[in-house]
Image (cartoon, rainbow, N blue to C red; front, side, top):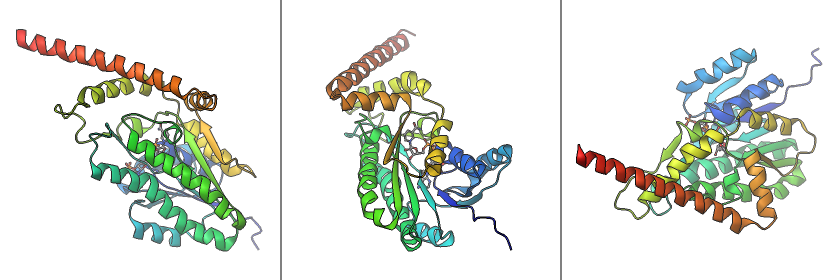
Length: 299
Ligand SMILES: NC(=O)c1ccc[n+]([C@@H]2O[C@H](COP(=O)([O-])OP(=O)(O)OC[C@H]3O[C@@H](n4cnc5c(N)ncnc54)[C@H](OP(=O)(O)O)[C@@H]3O)[C@@H](O)[C@H]2O)c1
């Protein structure tokens, strides 16, 4: 008879890149039965080669978290899941004055409703077994405001609110709910997956030059300073391993610094600094655009 204890099953969403991919590898390395899902299986080769390099295996399956039928199907297929990591997320940048309603809904469908749907489907089984852990990957943007990413920030605030609330609802069933709140880390969401709103460059909009200034600020100051994404994956697996995880984990120097400043009542100061950098970048971009225009006129 095989007396080996059954490996715990971890189901992760959004594993084609970034935190999801890295967490799948770290979980497989820690000997979990890892179900790594992604909406586009054509991208699975990145994960396959990362797993191969680490000399570990995981089950790769398709899941678009906005597809409610697929969410139910995957939850049934892999019942019982011990640990769920709601990681899938999208970003569409642009002022709240420009972003389209369709774009707003898309953000919420993935970042909030997708995570909620899968949580509900998987928690049903967890309630039956009387154990489980749900980790929701929120963001620093769920703690403090992020101008020009207001809808993304709202979706992450919503996800944190959801996590904090269901923590107590699921407590009687021995299910733990944890919110992970990382600052900026080098993944595709701030590179190839950093979408701009369709109206981002609408030159008729009063927000046009501020959108442009914000983007330049992101590209020049924020993206290059983003931290290594492996730290987040390692932290998620660390959370899985501890007996009593904390309600939430703030990850990254930037996130820790800003949340401490907020706890100290320095919100106005944070806003002042953010505004100062934004205006500086906007003015610089305006000057650059003006110089380009004049050079074109001369030639
Ligand atoms: N990187 C950061 O600085 C940072 C900071 C705080 C929080 N976060 C959060 O961390 C999570 C992971 O993002 P990341 O930073 O690792 O960025 P990423 O590399 O862009 O990964 C995002 C993942 O989500 C997937 N995804 C998007 N829409 C989906 C859907 N409808 N169904 C299933 N999967 C979907 C993407 O798949 P495709 O490849 O098909 O697009 C990709 O696999 C997100 O929730 C993000 O908001 C990131």
